[in-house]
Image (cartoon, rainbow, N blue to C red; front, side):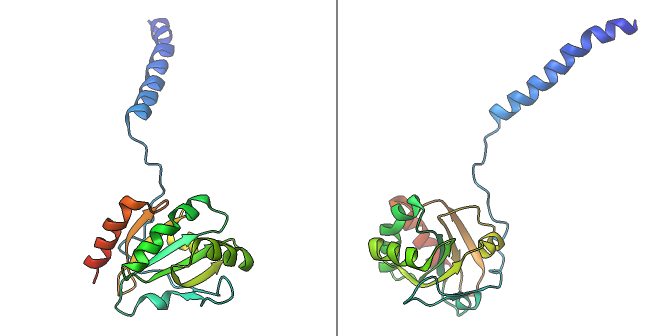
Length: 176
């Protein structure tokens, strides 16, 4: 009797592992690491200017009653270059955009802005990615919408494209 159970053990193990494999195929995968801070206040931070001619950035810059965007970018990031014209459209719609430059030299940020335009009011330098990690950001580019009280109301992961502009503007209008 004991021997019959041992014969079926490999088949049961195979069926169990096969079930786990099938679950992994059927269950949709979320490719993004979402911030747990959506709906929470922006963490406190103060960053020096990322390059000459721009002001640094502090969490205090977000709590004056006016909704804003916070864009996390890097000069070496190709999708950041691709989203630059759409950030310009958002700026032209009257949105104040602040930025955090990740692991960037001041001269590289200046070159990026000269080549792709500067839609940003302030740009803070986050050389060690400490503020990026505090925000729950997993990469660049990434954009946060901040209400007038300094609370994160939306996280946009990846580059902003033409189809994202209107929905982002609408979310900011709703936050007023």
